[in-house]
Image 1 (spheres, rainbow, N blue to C red):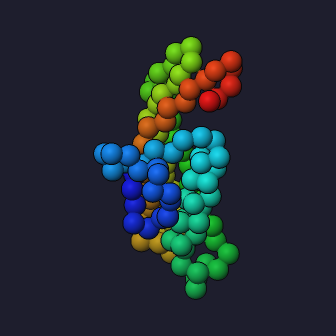
Image 2: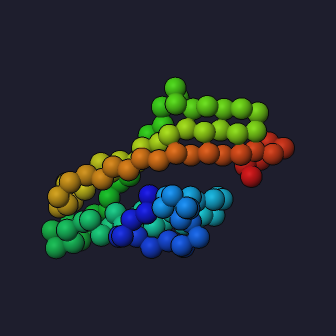
Amino acid sequence: PVTPYRSFPCSEVDSQNQRCITGIDAMIREGQSLKAMGDTLVNRTLFPHASVSFRYHIAMSDIVMGPDQLMTKWRLTSSNVVACGGTKEVEKQGMLMMTFKDGKIT
């Protein structure tokens, strides 16, 4: 989703004001951005070396797969923001679509 607290290329925003991240490199950058955002949720005065933990959740029953495509919904949750001095845990959800060609992610 489009958020005011993280930076991303405007090319990732579609006509319905939703973010669409394309490619493995973009997914890696997204993970790095989430890690940086999570680190801002820690009370550094009380927990100077703490790090927020995130986990993706995907239910096997939500996966739809064809010969050249996979789709599923996902949920991302934090597990220790409150323990690190934050006010509440983080939860986001979204959709994943992967396409394949010759057995490789395209």
